[in-house]
Length: 125
Ligand SMILES: [Zn+2]
Image 1 (tube, helix red, strand yellow):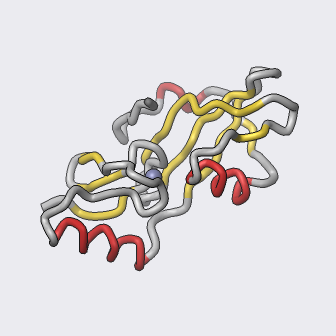
Image 2: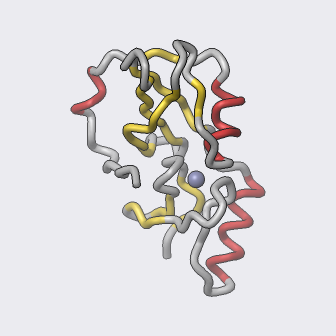
């Protein structure tokens, strides 16, 4: 289980983080629950998930073999994803992450966000 920090958390922001060349492919693996290969060999483990102010998310990853840290930006919710989540809420069900199978969205202030990708998918009423 990863922790979901509030918007105000900037303490870890000074960590040196590298970006990955193949973010899109890694994100697809991450959504599917797969292991993420590290460019240095070994795997990337998720240290933290942060919601970003514009509604997107941010993942902090660490390589198991080199201990280098990386950051991946998770794209914001699309119109159809927001609609999908809205429909679930309107039907009285638990809002689920459209990208993560079975992941229930958590409430952050006035929004519902996924604790695995940090993305905000709907306004909470
Ligand atoms: Zn998610």
